[in-house]
Length: 477
Ligand SMILES: Cc1cc2nc3c(=O)[nH]c(=O)nc-3n(C[C@H](O)[C@H](O)[C@H](O)COP(=O)(O)OP(=O)(O)OC[C@H]3O[C@@H](n4cnc5c(N)ncnc54)[C@H](O)[C@@H]3O)c2cc1C
Image 1 (tube, rainbow, N blue to C red):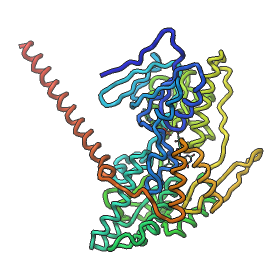
Image 2 (cartoon, rainbow, N blue to C red):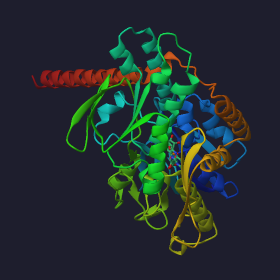
Image 3 (cartoon, helix red, strand yellow):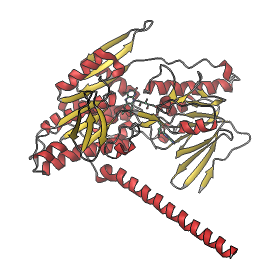
Image 4 (cartoon, protein in one colour):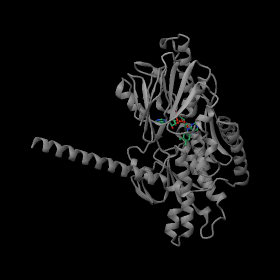
């Protein structure tokens, strides 16, 4: 089945945006009053506020609070429409984007294209690790992790074998960046506070949380001082932080780790979380195959100063997909990139040429990461200097809550989140501890289904080749 989005010769200029994350959504909203037709194509139905995924995984908030439906957000923006589908091809010469939803292929022509397809988890060439240690990129990931964490406690409760109980109650987080630190801190707090006294055969406060990183520091982008503070705080709440620890293998019930002195050890653990690396969307490769576009090692697109690709001043790449010196892969980089691209398109409607565009310049508003209840680290540049204001502890934690509340899309989501935070942080209770079988097993079932589908297609191909050969032989004979 195939659709082509109809075009009218008297039409307005068509802007196609790929992705409904920070880059894509903020670009679409910036074009609200522009005399253009905006089509946003994304493979997910929602705009996802990734910085709070760890709170979904650890039962503090519900997934809907950080994932409002994109078409509802854009409902009142008359010049915008939304297409659900996975982009699998872009034809730069014909200016067409091809996307797929189930069996249906859609072709969407563009005059201007903004690509904000983000990044996926990277396992540094060990993709098979993903089966045993899910990443933290999507709502599915967060719900699966919630199920795995709580499921491990449930299994431990039923076990009479102390070694098995220890394996089930050992949680390993790989990667000591902001996501890893947040996950490790929250699993420790959940075991220690929320689940305390809720089981009869096990004591959840005895659960082990291990945070591993091959690098020698916690939160490297925050510098040595804040990294040390974060490490000390994690250790205070019981997290075992192991640095210089390189994961060399993972299976169902264990990880193999190589330490700096060459020692190799096995950690018995069923529930593992991977937050060690990112790989930009493979859409970058589609661009590189058809133009002089280059990619960096993480697959990010090396864009020009106006965030476009070589030879195509109407194709912008923004957010986690773009490689721009000095711009980190954070929400503000994507928001500012998306708005820059939208402004460049608006300027071109007024007759400005690409050569007149001012280069994209990133305004660093600072960075923060939470560690546990009442504890975070924060770093904010001091205007006019190359220095940064640094703080940690309660003030930084309040700052984190306030700023993240502002950026959640939708008033009701803000209120719900605020109420859930109030409850979770004042009583240590969590309202979102439900887990379903599908959350835990659906990923494996889907992988198996796609494997069976590939086998079926291969069988069909073989049968067709056999039939062709037989027909050729019979006509030759
Ligand atoms: C767990 C976690 C915690 C984070 N914490 C912070 C934080 O505290 N502060 C901070 O500033 N940043 C944080 N970040 C980083 C921040 O979320 C990203 O930098 C930001 O989301 C990048 O925005 P983006 O628009 O480039 O991509 P994304 O927000 O990832 O959006 C990508 C969009 O593209 C769509 N898409 C992808 N491939 C296709 C395709 N082939 N076809 C169609 N659609 C496609 C996706 O469905 C999605 O809508 C965190 C990230 C994660 C994962």
